[in-house]
Image (cartoon, rainbow, N blue to C red; front, side, top):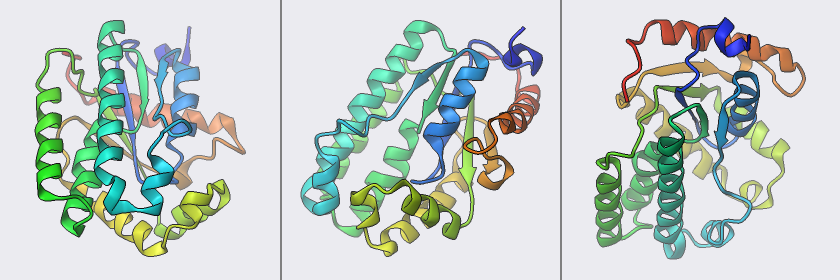
Length: 222
């Protein structure tokens, strides 16, 4: 019997991992998928043709980057629907529109026309019948200092060279966003409650919390 069954976590659920840059979304995505026997849905970063250009010029490339992410995530949503669930997803499609695109629009690094085009496309996508909303969103949270330290440790040049003011604003926007998010149940998990890098067995802490959350949710209906 898998730990997924031991902890009464449904084998056909869609679990989305959310949180700002540096909180360890990819690490927990893989650990949960391995333990539960789920498939993974990872954010495509390494081969993203716009990401490095975006960090060098937000105004020029913000719309292109967000459209790229939206298209990639929608393809993943369709794949999850076709498999019938059993996925852990690294970052949600809701963060793209609720945080990143909105931030660039409000800061003037995305034009009103581009923002309207983007949001209209997003709304059309989420209304399609093959868009599975997550059964649970695990929101990873911690102090700003903890997150900045993780960004530094990860060592991606484009992130390390980004002004700290950008990360501070991103952190605040995430806090505001999650406090009003209601598209699916949320499990808030502090990144100091577990350490999957140095203690892989701490996944049990996550599984226990996740099982308790599922016990509070009515039978899955997608």
